[in-house]
Image 1 (cartoon, helix red, strand yellow):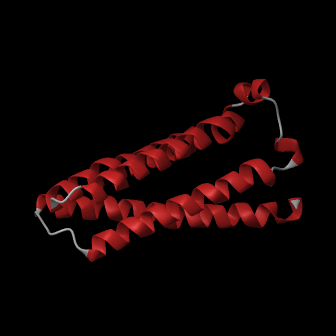
Image 2 (cartoon, rainbow, N blue to C red; image 1 turned 135 degrees about the vertical axis):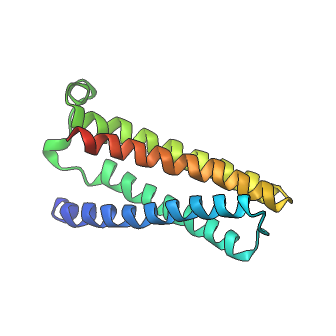
Amino acid sequence: MQEIYPYFIKFHVIFSIVFLIIAVGISFHSLYGWLTKKEYAIFEKKFRQVFLTFLYIDLLLGIILYFFLQKPYDIVTADEAMKNSTLRFWAIQHFSNMVFVVILSQIGSIFIRKTANSNKKFKYSLLYFGAATVIILVSVGLFALRK
């Protein structure tokens, strides 16, 4: 199983980049729709579904990497991870942030589905999906800046 780790992690990174493009796209589209008081139509519903689908698949890929495809030398105790900022980020902070983003996005999607007003749908979309996008960008961006 460990021989597929390098390929799987590359696929996860590429998939995450595609998801991030979708996340930024839905955030800007939501802002545009909210400001122009556009009607929330089938395109926006499909865009939301694509966003959530990619988010869940990305989470699943991360869980597979985290729990099933770890390299033997990456398996460390919590104490060891806390002493090493890189290990701490990938083992604790990144995973926790991504689970929070999934929960936040799902709550936003529920609010959007339950709301009849198009302007409020765009507002909820911007609030929840935009916040999720910012959390992802800040989380990974701060880590990248430290390196």
